[in-house]
Length: 105
Picture: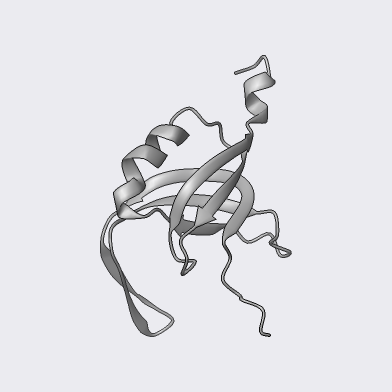
């Protein structure tokens, strides 16, 4: 049988979470458009080349996930649960927010 390439979870260090406006741009000679979205910027642990990635949150879950991440520190180790098609975040699990234990914060 064939192995699925769709990731059901992505673990990594959170870099940012923010709302992105709808827009478009010409990138490498191609017109690229995107919708507004609430995105989580993550450095995936599985990423071998150190590439930071952005993951859009399912529209109906934005409020809950945004509230959950409101007190999470930059660099916390989190796990993103992805939709069945692997395109949107449907849940977030904070595995370790190490900055919580540092006395400087």
